[in-house]
Amino acid sequence: MSTISVPFESRYITATGSATAITNIDFTAEDQTTGVPVGELAKLKTQLERYASGQRITFDVMIDPKGTPFQRLVWQTMMKIPYGETWTYGQLAQAIGNPRASRAVGQACHLNPCAPVVPCHRVVASNGLGGYYGGLDMKKHLLDFEKKGR
Image 1 (cartoon, rainbow, N blue to C red):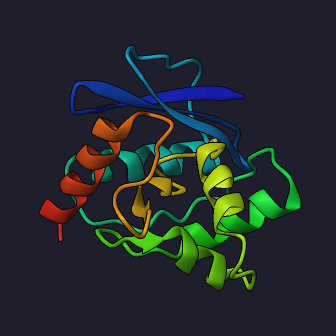
Image 2 (image 1 turned 135 degrees about the vertical axis):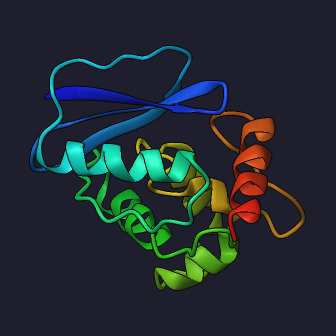
């Protein structure tokens, strides 16, 4: 396992993974790079650099986050939300075939270990932003950042 960090605004997007899959992505205050990225981690580094520069991007790396089958389904479906767009928790619940699961979808969003590649910031409440593990200011910032890149 290696770790990469890519500058993003006043923070870093830091990812851990291997040549075959990414297991964790988070926002950090410092560069936490260790080792030389290869395979999927090297591919992600290039894609994160493009994302951080404001380029519209669809991430296409193999991720292998730890989670329940339900959480993994939510995260996989979340990756279909286009750059610069939002879905509500209810729309995401509908998309996974469980329209009454919007609260469980919200919990899966909160536990997402691979943001912003798995774009939980693009999932909002029907009456506002909803929540975000990085805080509502960060969620709003990411949404505004992506709207500029559209």
